[in-house]
Image: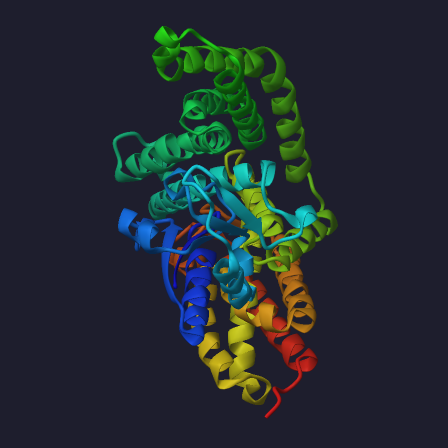
Length: 454
């Protein structure tokens, strides 16, 4: 029996490949042949072919982003969030093995391995799809902006210099595309290709009006659902159906979304964003510390899940408003969980299995790279002890970063961005905040975790 699988997470960095590895290892142990296609930040790898589909018994889709299923018509499909493939790969494989093939190629059989109330679909999946396409742009643009600060904080103001060119590339081009790309792919997730054009235009209007990420998200959902409604409910004579995807849907959906953004949505959302920015800039130390505490805890709570991504998106949104302190707290708190676990596996080897000690080495690399997902294998194995320790360590890290008034001008990069002069303000205290959080996380894990049974 041959099974197929597709794994995909919003960032396309860690969960995608961890889920693929879990499925492959479980299938090998069960004596089942499986081919896993990964849809990560570098694109599709190990792509499923038409011949694979012919030979397969069932397909597992472990994804938190939109996956087109048209090519898999006739195969039973097991749906699950990407986390399920990491935590319970054997259960997914058993469900796929027990799935019955449809009676005809047009019949679709779909099953879910998650309770309906927890199902990650609808608006959540559409939002995460938009975020997954946006994050590489954010990372590239942010790091290029950070490189411009090598020449001084204000060096980019001098036209014709390399610093100015770097700022134009990172800020003028990459960051300018963030909101349109976010909105465009939210709409694409909802309505497929017909949603892309109105989504991009709505996102660009959100950026021009100043309503930022919040406006872009609203524009993306409006564009997607308007395009979907036109596609499904506007009926044309057969002779004109060919015009629908290239003229009718793009024209009317773009026009409607554009008018909504200009006359209804844009201005009030801009007022909300301006109020939030001014509030954050006027925060006292105590309030700033509390915000850092909350953001830090969110980063560690689900390690790459929706709460983590909400905190990250909040920090990125504020970068465009020249509020850099929350982003510093967010990245520091995101580095702390895997670093703390890596340290714990060194300080208390008796509390961890040999496999976990090896995973600790990988976690250290992921931690310095600001990939919080490096902590997932430990959290999945012992959630009630590990997750509280991670949340506590990250919350303290975030609070200290805000209290020390540390600021970060790049939205990604981990330890490597710290090497860029002027990218981080108050660098010494920023490193201290990360170190304190890492040590606290490690000590709490050692205190709470039981030694493995021999």
